[in-house]
Length: 405
Image 1 (cartoon, rainbow, N blue to C red):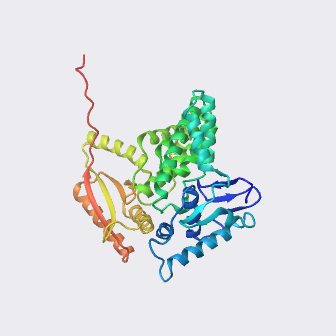
Image 2: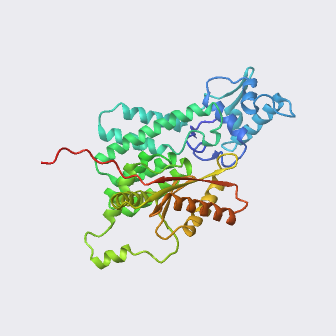
Image 3: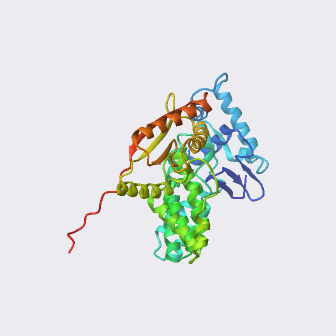
């Protein structure tokens, strides 16, 4: 019988160790093997009937095999794998009973899931801020990934994984609040980066990371985080970051600039490198340019239009990789087909916004036709279909003001 306590990690990679030897799900790629072991550990203290395990592992009966024999073979392989911890460990840990199979509860287990839950409960049960922060940070470090990540498609894993993931997000958010209140920006940034690995599209963790970096004096780092987040949100969800995150980005850019510069330095910074065609910029800058042009158009009375170019497949949305390739091609078409005074920016995962200053509706329609023809000529076998929409520039509504004295 094994005397050493077995340490079991289920948050992230699945592994079992006894201090001198270890096995993990990366060393053996048999999903069913690790699924069987994980299931028996998680429901330790009960016995799983063969029918239940057969349904779990094969969704009923394994094709081309006797289900009972297939289960016996898999259990033999599981014991052989567990024997790597210690000779005979497999038969000590995985027991065969009349009613089915069970994990031996006489062997002591140290589960990372139990430790994680205990730390979260300790944090919630103490009023001392330092003690609470210590528990929260230790819990966050212990969370190496979602519960049984490689088995995440299993129905019985989903609710457990969701529970621990929610606990982790709450734990990280509370720890960040305490770190921010103490201006511990380096630790806050480190925690945010770890949290973004678990929640890559979380605008809250992105905002807090950017704020921590700005407060620590790393404006360039904050700008890079913004660029990464913007790309991720655009690719995954087809949206741009929230206004609060964009404001932080602008703050980082302003803070990174020297306090005073000369007129010649300013002109040098503003000068554009020689290039042909339209100006392609980020959506945030596009919005600012749009506001400026809308004001000028309102004041001068000159026509100006906004063009939206959307991409879709013949049967609906394009696959992500295909869409990215099409959007790259379309960006180059826009740059070459538009005038130097025109501005374009990607405003969603499948759309470009184009600003056409001093262009009436008929001119704008001609621009649309030029873009679609150029795209068809350049990429005749592309699966993409282009759709265009033209709108006149609309100035911001006037602020309500009281009567002037």
